[in-house]
Length: 552
Image (tube, rainbow, N blue to C red; front, top):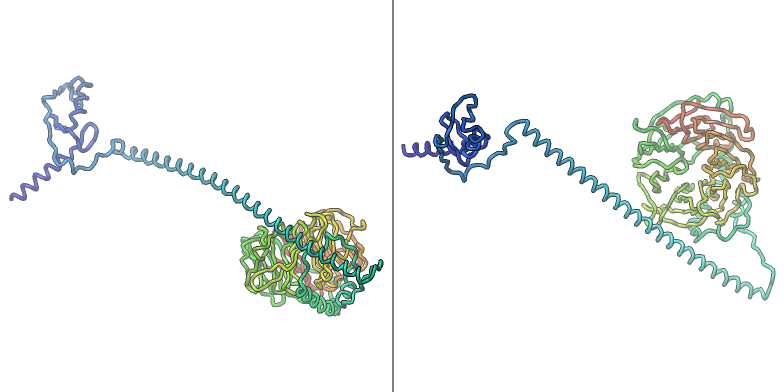
């Protein structure tokens, strides 16, 4: 019974400690009082109200009931130390809560805005600092390279001076210089397919030189290709006629995702005598390798970048070389991605070609530097570097002879330099005698499979076709809408070029006025390949992910 009484007393004390003011809604009340009419409120607030209402009961304003301080009954509260802190008066209703939440939200949004603003400023500062650091690293690398080149030139000059002094002493004052005739059979054979060697200025000579082991590999490949080329470039009985090409129709196939808006570049594996592999780079940042003969996709390579253009994608056999829009050079070989050695710095690459050996890659910079890389396991090792043009910043495109011993370098002034990789000298310059009709930069270079014709496209859309045996321009084709790619048929009988408005135009070599137009859709043609016996043509466009197979 005593415990029950104690519990009741505690409950009564708890009820008294949780009084709510009838005037303000505050709970608990520090000085609770009870009115004769039964209301409970704070004594301090009540006295203020009585002063404002002239001692009339504030809870019964419509009556003449007066109230005096002596009529108030004080209520004592207990356990005030255990009472929770009072709620704020402005949080007693839903509108008040919504107002509070809105204020808190506004504060958070403003704080987030200030934080993001500070982050953006920090990013700008970091970007500026990184740019300065990158510029400093590039300058240092360029200075180091120039220093090394100067050291090599000095060493070569010292050796030349010593050899000249020894020769003069041995000849006992002989005033006549003797020039040795080329005895190397490979060099003599190269002279029959390449333009005759002319005098070269010292600035155009190779810096450092191609290593003898690599040069031997290039010459061995030249020997095997030049001996088999005649058999591979003869017309067979079933070779396509102009009437056959005129009746070509397009069959479309898609090898890329639906998100791809178009194909940036398309190349073949370099085997024009048989339907080999087709490599395409599309805007979905994927590269597809398709087996033309077996009519199936071999692999999809997630390149994570788009090829920089038609001249920045090349393939020989299983070796695929690409320069992405980010400027990085990568080689894809048997599911491996191979990049140049970290010590090599490449800037503004304008062309890349894989040598027929499949182990060597030529990379050209706009400054005129030509880099020769050798693929060694999982890295591209720089084997040689030289300046291929006379003026810095004048290199715009490169092309490689089918036999692999002549490198064509397109220049900003519209001329084309032909380098003999065997002698490492400039053999000749096409257009230097005024034969070039345009001084516009060369954008695309293509050789015929026989190796006797070279086609060059300039930025104004003019195609110049050269006969390398005579070093003479045999025709000039003007395409106002622009040309992106060119291709000779396997035996060099037909010449095709793709225009910027989606047309594939085929002309007959030696009968250039006759043209066959193949058209299906708009958009720049970004790749052209001939099939076996010229019975088919493959094309791609920048506005479609479809690869078009033209044939009967």
